[in-house]
Amino acid sequence: MSTDNSAAADPRDLLGYLLKHANLQLTALTDAALEHLGIDSKDFGTLRVLAHGEPASQLQVARKLSVDRTTMVAVLDELERKGIVVRRPDPADRRRNIVELTDQGQRAFDAAQAAYQDAENAFLAPVSPSAADQLRRTLRDLLEH
Image (cartoon, rainbow, N blue to C red; front, top):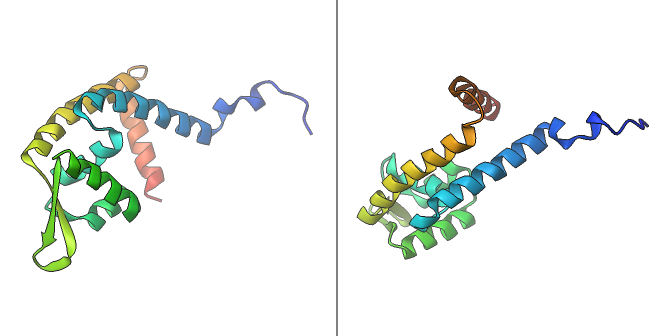
């Protein structure tokens, strides 16, 4: 057993620590930026999926975001209560609910997109634009395997 407690003990040398704490920091920034809109970064992800696609079922949105159905229902319940989304039975399969942004939801998404981008830019400010692009590419590559 090593008795050297210098750099080897620094948790910032561990990828898991770095990814976790970078995510926590980014989430805190984005949640703060979105707070005035009555949503958080989790809600923003849902709005983004809905704003950039065909009307989708709750299950399709959950799969796209890699969240379980129970979590998705809770997120949609809250967004529906706020008037941001509407759920209606799928005419082709009445067992499914189709989820769509309301007009208010589209406005909220447009404002949230700008606020989110500002927060992300603040998070990435310490690195060059090319380093930020490389970080995105690297993380995508890791997640695709």
